[in-house]
Image 1: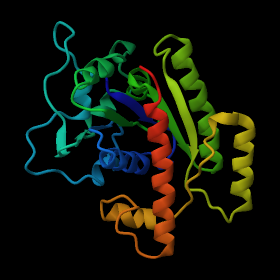
Image 2 (image 1 turned 135 degrees about the horizontal axis):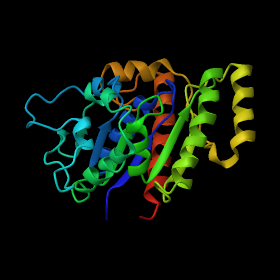
Image 3 (image 1 turned 60 degrees about the horizontal axis):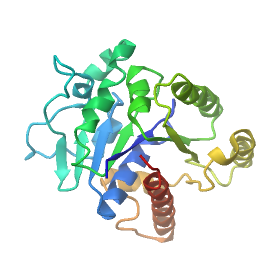
Image 4 (image 1 turned 180 degrees about the vertical axis):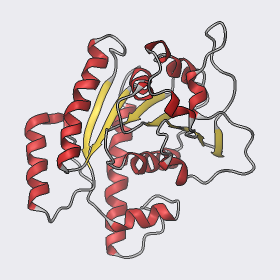
Length: 262
């Protein structure tokens, strides 16, 4: 069975890296071999996975856009964080790729293909803007997941992103790309405006909006500061509620991804 590739994307700060972090941890808990790819030059995902000082020399994310003289994949390995978890960390060269030509688009897919037998799941954290690395992630992915918050700017950006994803398919760049869903995230459940905004999104995007939602919870930030998923080491009712919520949503995502035929 070949590695499943999930791109987590949106054009604004919608909790992409937090979601990638939790999906990666749950994948390992479910005995999957997980590869993380951080294409976001801001490097947020790297911060919650401290460097493994004893790890062998590793490739970084921008290396995945290079090919050999004859089009062969670049040689090298990601940084292993544990036996079943590895990462290609973001680096500053990613910013230089923003305006790279379309000839680079398939390089990421070619390079990731060589790790098919090594990993079961690949999760790509993407830049918060439309650029070549984001396009390449869409070309490489089996499915895309879009977390969204209820801010005016974030909802407007989602419409643009939706058109972009559809264009990737229509232009034949990745006709097999599946939209796993749009995930409402950081929802203030006490805000009438946000709940009304969520209802409007469901009217606009229909079944593409996942039925599950993730509420804004301080315990998630606290867990990240300790470099662990929110469902581990829970303290107090609010923390336990957040842990159950996040684990349930992440499990739903992984089950949906696992059902996609390649």
